[in-house]
Every structure is written in C-alpha cells, then in structure tokens.
Length: 99
Image 1 (cartoon, rainbow, N blue to C red):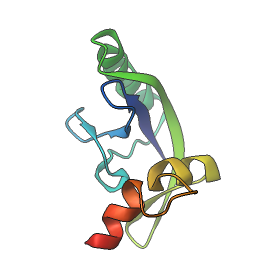
Image 2 (cartoon, rainbow, N blue to C red; image 1 turned 180 degrees about the horizontal axis):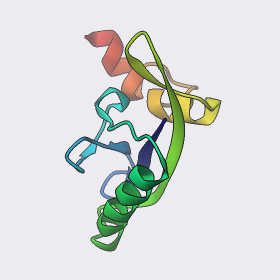
Image 3 (cartoon, rainbow, N blue to C red; image 1 turned 120 degrees about the vertical axis):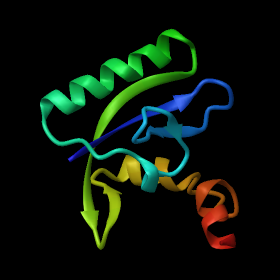
C-alpha cells in the first residue's frame, strides 16, 4: 500500500494527497493506493500540482495499516508525519497532543 506525499510550496508543510486529489496535512486523511496503476494515476495528478507550483518533491511512500490507521513503513516518513524530533511541542505531534 502506498500514499503520495510532498511539501507544500507556500509554507514547507508536509502534505499527502487526499481522496479527492487535494493536499491534506494529516496522514490519516491520505488516499491509500493499491497497485502500480493507482500510484501512476495519483502521481500524474500530483505532477499537475507541481506544475502549478503548489507542492514540491512529490513521491510515493510505503505505508501499512495498523488498527485502522495509516502508518509509514520508513522511519523518515514517520518523522515527516509527526514533525520535528527536536521540538515535540512543535509540528503535527503538538497539535495531536492538544486534541
């Protein structure tokens, strides 16, 4: 299973491609992709956002599902999904703690 990720050009925020092709800030809202054709179609849509200068560095990442949650396979992507490791009071992990 894969999801498409990028960085929003406006503010550098890590984003994922949602179900409708829009960019979302939470991994839990990302569209899960199965198979090469789904990934290729999603990447083609993402490249349109690159051309419009909405996002940069678009790529697909491997994810798994754990108790109904999308979880990145690689540590790098776990960190990108959570926010900075040196300041847990910043980024997405700080917002999650406040909820």
